Every structure is written in structure tokens, then in C-alpha cells.
Amino acid sequence: MKEAFQNGVKKYNVYTWDEVKLHNKPDDKWLVIDGKVYDITSWAKKHPGGAKVISHYAGEDATDAWVAFHNDKELVSKFLKTILIGELSDYKPTALQLEFRKLRKTVEDMGWLKTNPWFFVAHFVHLIVMMVIAGSIMRIYGTGWLPYIASAVVFATFQAQAGWTQHDYGHLSVFKTNRMNHVFHYITINILKGASSHWWNFRHNQHHAKPNTIRKDPDIAIGYLFLLGDYMPVSWAKRKKGVMPYNFQHQYFFLLGPPLLLPIYFHLENIYFVIKRKDWLDLGLTLLFFAGISLTYEPLLGHWGAFCFYMFARCLESHWFLWVTQMSHIPNNIDVDKNLEWFQLQLITSCNVDPSLFNDWFTGHLNFQIEHHLFPTMPRHNYYKVKPLVESMAKTYGVSYRSKNLYQAFVDIYRSLKKSGEIWYDVFYA
Image: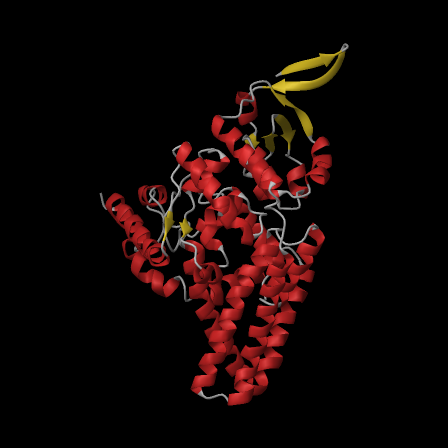
């Protein structure tokens, strides 16, 4: 560390990258934003996005992640001033970083971070329409097997689409103010879906900060059921860790994956999260959803009948949700943190599914997974605008840009699970 002076008065400290990289411990965390060094050791606990997501960049350059996550940069910069401790003497962004920052500037100048409000009005209205239809079918046509199935399918569709819509509000990509985005996030995920807004943010922000990164992305922390990628199977096999026959995981995935994720695991995790954190607002808003389910379906099906209907519809939605959300990540690079640059990290851990009217609607535009990960606050109706620029940049810098058809994307989940299981088996029984 060196000290810089101006007119004989200490102005700031000057650090080297080697010094900053040492501060990546739980009780000693620094990070770099645009060449400035910040001590986040105490601030992390106050971070609105959660302590973990900001801590994942301890000892690293968080510039592009910080820009990607924050719409209100002027406000956030005021907080940064309080934890500024110096700057880097050897801060030299790479050509790839500089090129991506130019792309980001183009996105902002073109207005692609601005929302077409009618797009989201239409999506919200179509949620309400499906919710009403789902609750009306059995009232009109009775509770026979055909109206029962039809109602469950419409309800599952409503829930899946509500999942994509809450995702928009959760990423602050709809309204100009964070406050309004938060309000509608409460409405769509808590009241319309029965899940915790804060739980979703806690998990999803970490996923976006370090996708497919072991010990940092909670979406891949499923080792006691499934081992993913190439690194994790080897690591677990060498340590004789885990109890599952992972060489069969591509088969038992169909029993323990899509059927159980939403009906069982997510419910338990939500309950644990809100009670542990004493998040009574989240809990109260979530209970409004279940009160609505009770008032709508118990008069038709009775208490246990309504419960079974709900779990059946959740199971249908769970298949939809898991295949769509994992088709863009599970088959891709999964590894420990290699401190990759933002552009490279997002592209090697994500892939797209070819756009079409159906694919866009069916996936909530998550078929543009690469563009979404590079620009998480971009309204989804603008992904197609930036897509050619991202493809061109990837080609120029030799970074793989993958896009598949929907069928291939689904099949690759199965194939990647099979491959990872075989890697585990070969090492475990070597």
C-alpha cells in the first residue's frame, strides 16, 4: 500500500491487485469498482441485496456486476463513498471488459433499458384472466375429471406465467422506481404465487452474480441429490461424499426433480426462510395467496380435495418451471470461482433457446438467457434488440455463444446429468 498526498495532505491509499485479492475472507472483504477499492466487511450486512451476493465479489473486480444490478447508481454511489478506502495503482481493464462497457453504453444510449408499459400491462391482465378462468371452470361445468383437469392446467399455466412476470419485477426491469418494482413484486410473487419476495431475491441475486459457481450459486447447491458439471462429480467422488447412486441420476431425476421441486422443496424452503428471518410481512402476504386458494376451491372440492388439486397443479407447473429454468444452465460450465470477467462468465454458464412467439411466451423470454444475464435489469421485450450485438462481440473475442432449439435444450439436461453421473462413477470406483 502506498499513500497519495495532495498539497501535503493525505488524499487516499493506493493498493495493488495482489493486496486487494488477500481481502476475501468472511471477516475481511474488499472489492473493486471502476478502479476504486471499497471495504465491505461491515457494509455487507446492511446491503439491501443481501450480504452473500456482494461478498461473492470479495477480492475481485465487481465493476460490471455493480453496473448490471443497480438502476439507481447515483443513490448507491452515496453509500459507496462511506466505505471507500483507496484506489488501485494497477487497474487496467482488459480489452474484453472495455468492449463490454462500450456495449453497455450503447444499450443505455439506445434506450433499451426503458420499458414499454403496455407489454407488462398485457402480461399482468392475462394473468388475472387465467386466474379467473381457472377458478370458474369447475363452478360452471362441475367437478368431473375433465373440468378438474382443465382447471388444473389453466391454474398451472397461470402460475407459470406469474413466475415469469414476478421475475421481471424482481429484476427491477418494469418501473422507473425501485419502490414500485418492489410493490408489484410483492403482488405477483407473494399474493399471486404464494412465495416469499425476499427469499427469491436472496437466491436469485446470488445466481446472477456468480451463475453455475460452486459454493456461490444456490441453484446448483443440490449435491445430496444431483451432481452437476465435471468438477463437482470428481470432488464428491474423491471425498466419498454423498449417498445417492449418481450414475443413475439422469433416471431418478424424473422422480425427484420436476415432480417435487415446487410442490415440496420450495414450500419448505420458503417457510424456513421467512420464519428464520422473522419476515412477517412476507409471510402475511403469502398467506393471502393460500386464503384465496381456500376460498376458491374448498367450496367445490372440500378441504383435502382443494389441497390435492393445488398440489397436482403445482406438480404440473413444477415440470414447466424446472425444464425452462435449467435448460440454459445445467448443460453448461459448472466450476469453482475462477474470477472470470462478467461477459465471459455469463456466456460460458448460459445458453439461449431459439426465439419464436411460442418459445418467448412459454419461457417468459428466458430463452434469451444470455442477454438477460448480461443485462438483468433490461425489460425482456428488448432482448432481441441487443442479441445481434452480443453475438457479434462474442464472435470477435472468441467466446462461445450457444443457441439451441427447445427440444435440444431439454435433451441436453438429461445428457449432462448422465455424463456427470458417469464421471462420478468412474472416479468413485477407480
